[in-house]
Image 1 (cartoon, rainbow, N blue to C red):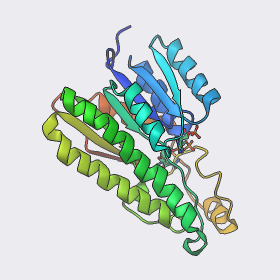
Image 2: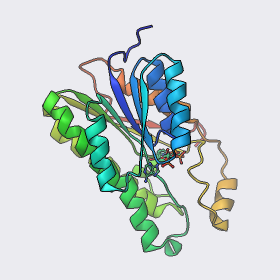
Image 3: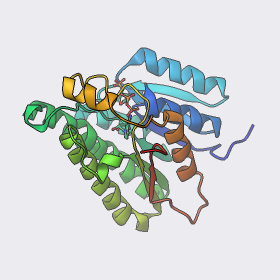
Image 4: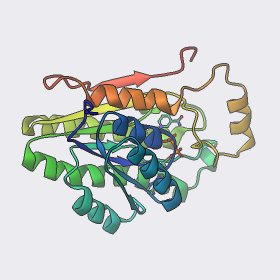
Length: 241
Ligand SMILES: NC(=O)c1ccc[n+]([C@@H]2O[C@H](COP(=O)([O-])OP(=O)(O)OC[C@H]3O[C@@H](n4cnc5c(N)ncnc54)[C@H](OP(=O)(O)O)[C@@H]3O)[C@@H](O)[C@H]2O)c1
């Protein structure tokens, strides 16, 4: 059955879990061919199988986005994608004085440098074709700084600036760039944050998270908008937050 994205190909980073996985399957449901990337091959195989069951072409290209050579390879093998969902990212929440420079550099490497690098790889090719849509998954932390999430927020502020900048420079080349900024989502991303103060603060929250599917729905909204319409920024948060 033809979907709204039939004939288009989407590269989804961080497709092995959480928001990226839900997004890959949702785009497949709309008829897009899927290229799923992440480091965990078994999880990628699962998402590829789920997409194929929906009747679309799907493939996994596994690798570490922190590795510049892998990003180049991904650009060469997925450069034909019409849609990039720039989603891979990670965090460690802890009091700012207890975050190490290595952890800070690690978050910036994946959340900012790698996201820039893959956007650049695909952006060059999209600009040549004068068509394409990039979706940056930032965060509510792209505009606010929360306790224990200072460095993560700094990476997401930077990523949001990159999204604005890519939009500014590439709209003339026919590209659309959207930023989706979710609040707390029910995924495994906080599992590495085991500082007691962080666990207490999470336990004290008075609202529940939104789902990965809620974010995937926002991505689908952005990439199925009419030809002349580009949703620049979609902010979504738990209704009680
Ligand atoms: N969950 C939230 O509350 C929330 C809220 C706002 C924004 N976000 C953002 O949404 C995005 C997805 O997060 P999530 O909540 O879905 O987290 P998640 O379930 O932990 O998924 C993170 C994904 O990123 C991939 N990834 C991380 N580092 C990578 C690397 N070096 N190379 C390749 N892939 C890498 C992981 O794949 P592998 O482990 O297989 O490599 C995984 O597929 C992140 O950018 C996050 O900042 C999340």
